[in-house]
Amino acid sequence: MAAEYAKGGNSGESAPSSPCIMVVFGASGDLTKRKLLPALYNLAAQKLLPEEFAVVGFGRRTFGHEDFRKYCSDALTEYLPQGIDAGTRDWLVERLYFHSGSFDESAAFAELKDLLHKVDGERKTGGNYLFYMATAPEFFGDITRQLKGVDLTAETDGHWRRAVFEKPFGHDLASAKALNKELLELLQEKQIYRIDHYLGKETVQNIMALRFGNGIFEPIWNRRYIDHVQITVAETVGVEMRGGYYDEAGALRDMVPNHLFQLVTLMAMEPPSSFDANIVREEQTKVLRALPPMTQAEVAARVVRGQYGEGEEDGQKAVAYRSEPQVPPNSATETFVAMKLQIENWRWADTPFYLRTGKRLQNRETKIVIQFRRAPLMLFHQVKNGPLSPNQLVLHIQPTEGISLRFSAKVPGPIVNLQPVEMNFRYTDYFKALPSTGYERLLYDAMTGDATLFQRADTVEIAWGVVQPILDTWKFSPPQDFPNYQAGSWGPKEAEDLMTKEGRGRSWCNE
Image 1 (cartoon, rainbow, N blue to C red):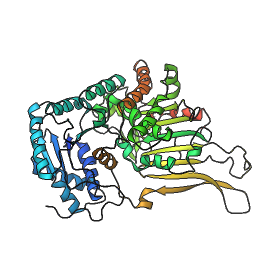
Image 2 (cartoon, helix red, strand yellow; image 1 turned 90 degrees about the vertical axis):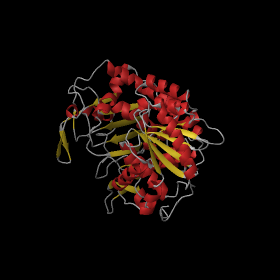
Image 3 (cartoon, rainbow, N blue to C red; image 1 turned 120 degrees about the vertical axis):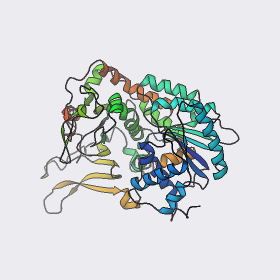
Image 4 (cartoon, one colour; image 1 turned 180 degrees about the vertical axis):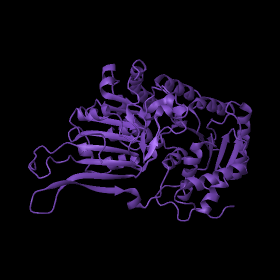
């Protein structure tokens, strides 16, 4: 028995999840060691995992249980920057098991079932299983079918069985519909958890708290007071060793119908009548239904794509996308996309939402900027510093999570001189919170059966329906100017023009 783990304990009101076994398919992959294992450790440290808990890894490597425990212990040491409590680590590691097998091997799943029954007996986990698909999407259907074939998906005798599916969930509208159809023939919708790890970020979760828990914000959260909204997901890295996957996906498929649209829906949704998962997700889905599919002319006018060429990152030479490993030298895949969205409903009519995401950009940052309309009477039009800056509320999602409010204040002195100032809130400063992976909340919710932060089948399909006309337009009009932005820049000039041509600022960056 490991030493007593996690000194301190759960600082909130949440109770540990119910007893269960988490089965990770693709357990020796990058996602498991970088994100899932550190997230489980953090949950254990917060006393949010029950004593009756275990993890069974499934993969092609010929690990024994002790080999897997050593592999995971090393990964925790490497990917937990805040350091490790030995008792918590040992508590988690002793609950790890591994089963070698292929996803197309029926006998391997029959053996997996035997192992789960054995672990159930050892750990008293009650026959509750959370299946996590940390694999490529092409294996989702095969794995689920194999599980059903050995009767591991049936919820009987009070046992629950749930399956978590990583993104991307399809690569276009047709494939998303086909995958949904396949999974819904094998599982009930309430058993399916389509994960988007961006929704595990504290600031993303705080959007609803900010809007609906404070009387000062919701009354002005509409077209009358907000001029526009900017959502930026910028990365400084290139495609690294994922060139093969990325060249098939591109920035639009990889980021927009999942990460960015989820942020849009949380920003724009109507207040739900409760935090019941289906009620919240229905309000989010209504936002996507209010995004009409673009015509070819609208795609040309409101969507910009880019691909990075050579440049510099942190003083080091960065190669062009077409020179990255596993990328064709004439690739037409976009590494950057920007667009202007119009939500056609009563709250947001004529208030544009500007989205931007890309690789090899100047800074790594994910943030949402809500820019308010200027005051109707400019009493201070003759101040020394010229026109006043508009008020902004900025939600910083990564790398530092927090909220900033920018407004104008008078500079001390006899002259009326105003300048913009900021009030800043950072989670680490105020709550002394430890760094997280973004997966902690999502794993906990999946174990407790709360699907609020997971996508429904219809939501996925509606999101792809918005993106599909862009994919179709691009398919028949390949880019003529790639690469069209330098690595280390803020992307192609045409992305800035989406805003500047409407008099909305110099660029997308609000430094």
